[in-house]
Length: 345
Image 1: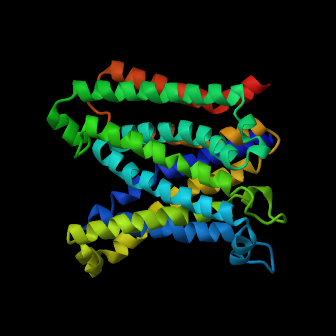
Image 2: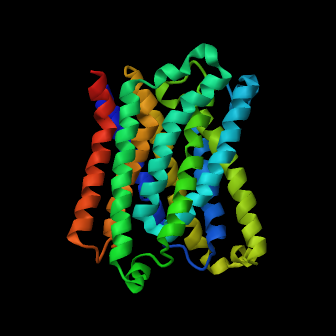
């Protein structure tokens, strides 16, 4: 029963994350770089900090925890957060050129597979005595492969969509639709976004022993998102200067509206990793699902993002054959979420 609860919590977090770009559409008169960094303040600083506080016992502090932790682990957790920040930037661009459904599908699918595989590999390089590669069991590898197959099928559906629609129809569904450019950016986004899970694994020892299992990864999550915030802030402020959009922050008439929707978007985005932490707290009896949990989260993000893509009419005008291929891909992804546990049993 605990496993079902854990997977359900992760699914709720995935649904919230997949919904985070809906409020962004309500932001007015701000350039991409301006609203991206403001929602990032909430997504990568405010809510991760509040979440991490849940893991702090009475009389302790986060600063004390980070100061007493292994300095290499803290450094590597933040470093992979910085690298993940590159994925976060290109992730937003992938949806600009492919739309919410296809952009998230390719980016998150790549992230799911590489994030799951890279984490034990990187940790094994630094801590070979811990035998981290043993986490990559046959069940986990098969689960990752099935996830990537599901993503590939959705990618085929996206290519069919690209070939079947006129330029006018593409622009109507996604304003800046560009399939070749979008795919390249989405693959880069997925590769770099997978660093988030690597950072979490390096930070797995950064917690208080007294903390509940469901809260133990939240301090590491804060370190990863802090690293990502630094990357995004540097790029967004550079774009503000390059595009002369500093004036966005002086538009007092839209600040109230934009701040509210940035806050909502940030909260929804952070919900995925808050849900991942809580969900893993219920999966402690299944080492396979603990290793595969990040992949499950990303796969479910893809499923729900395509649901939103359908709601937002991004697949409008596609043939029934294209929709059929899309549905097959979604089914494969759903199956991949619980396949490793079935194989392990």
